[in-house]
Image 1 (cartoon, rainbow over the protein chains, first blue to last red):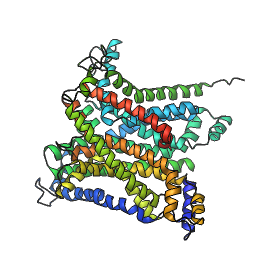
Image 2: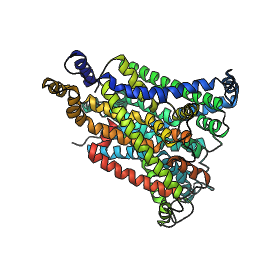
Image 3: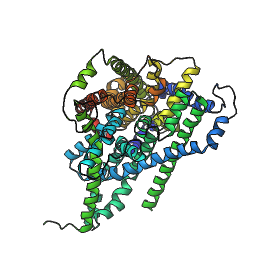
Image 4: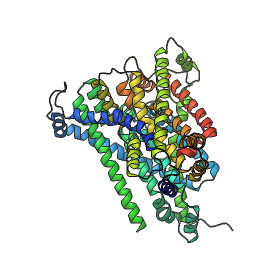
Length: 296
Length: 273
């Protein structure tokens, strides 16, 4: 695809008078809408975070100092970042093998797998979260099976635990990991895999020396999407995590809509934004390092 | 000649197969379980249900007992339709301008238009609430619609750009050399060819709006209740079994829509590419 794009660019640039692809003015309406309703609000967020009181009258960065000096807020931020990385790890662990099966499957099976991946993505987040309550609850599927088999004497407590939340988020976020990976895998030349096998490489060796390096760009994109989505998944975090597990989203919601301390909520929102951006930058950097390393 | 499977290859098949099976169960299990649960005759969410009935669907469709849910669903639909229309119009136009321009400004605009996919929705929701409040607006469906339109634009921009990148420039050159104006070429050549891409993007954008929580959470008020927010309230408070019926309805509708969209625009392939 990048080749096609490059070719297109050359043509569009080369034929000054002939074909203009489209007028640049066509981007103006969306640009103005973004400036007014996206950039504007985000700037307000930065401005409000500088105020030190709930009435928004004093500019003294008191909320930033309060936030940065309180170990509780550090813990909440740390938990949020940790949740993001745990979800990324879990979706990678089970998602990537599914992508490998997809790669080796016949076209008909591939279509079915794609359907299985996309169906949960289009099913509302609230519905998916609700499904996990049915599964992880006291009388839920997991406990019925575990107690029926005599594995545990009493119902396990899975809701309102980090483990339960990570399991639920694994399902909720897995499509975001898989779609970019499948997209990249679809462009892998099957001859490469055949060649690797014909030259006597084991399946493990083919995986680590051929398939994995070639699908790394998709993996990086998937990790970025999953991290971003799981750290901001307010509904899943609040319903399955409950009040015992506090994440930045819950803090932002409480401070802004329950306590009405907008400056502190803004500080928490910017902390979330900065953490996510930093984590994404780290993931992309690791991905680039990995690609250089593998291609060297 | 049958090939002998080496132990390492066998271990590969076992490990990858087992993990992939877990992945499939995790992906599809909850969807099926919620569908089955919605037919329970019980007041609890015990699984498997002790008996089956349609009573929760009946209660859900009862206008007197579920009026608030109906209003929230109608609001969500109205907002999603308008937000999708706006996002499709603006997003398609922007894609036409930037998709194949390699210039610096085009890449910067593309990054900006795609950024709602990555930036925390909750941060944007709070920002939008404060911004509109300072401008003197009260929470309303119009504001939610604007917020949704911004958040869902990336879906339209992405699928439209993908269609444009596969469009053969020779077609446009022939059209131009035959004397067609820029606008005529757009209307008669470009748009018809990229229409399935736009349509697929609009569908995904619509689903994203229906599903949106972060913006609705901050901008909805008592008179502008949205379905996901109401569902959240129902789950948090009493664990109403009607939620299971709504979920069942949701799952069946999505399956139906997916099958239709698959036939019309080849949805799954577009989402993968």
